[in-house]
Image (cartoon, rainbow, N blue to C red; front, side, top):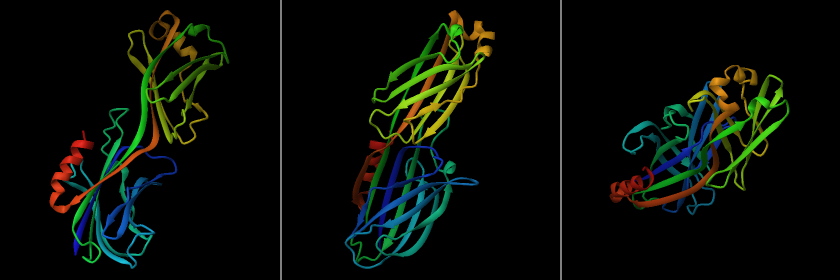
Length: 302
């Protein structure tokens, strides 16, 4: 039996979508056979779970079923310690897959700290395979990277003459990020004593799968005293009805705090997921695994 090891780093992983998400690793070759890992994030009644499977490609070059002993693991950032692993043995036909539908809760393995709005999750996965020497003539390893593209930024909007804003009267502004995405924001009053914030996100020829934004109300000293945060999935071409609950009446009651010189100051922080940006694969013999791993970490873990 020869052993093959596959390491997979997923960067800037997005957080759970209502309908889940499926990610495939770059395909890797073991002898004449071709494989990939499949990672699903599935919503369940008791939380979101990662499902993980080892899958043989439909059209690889080996004609018969392949018996494989395999272990799938989530690793720490340095790839040196195992957070959780599961093992199985299966005879893989072409196109078949084997794994676990409830491998682990996503909160247990994501490296996201939760303290930074722009700090997205990173995942570190290992697959160990043992199979007949007729299929895998030499032991080897591969290192793959999947990178999600993100566009994010922050800006401050000074809304002048706020107290004079009338019902259904709209004020708008627009900002373009360094990556080319356009964020348009509008504010208007739905009635005499309250208003609702609406945000329109224009993808600028990009496939946006998720957007999130948070809005701070800044006081006269520039300190954020109110915060609203929301997330929108998939259809970000439509108007985003942002759940902004502060009313004009509440703001004018504290005009010395919030409306210095009759200016309402809002600070926006926003991020948009642009889908998978790049996939890379680097393979080596098992004897050079440590050297390859150090190179991989220096390139992608900084």
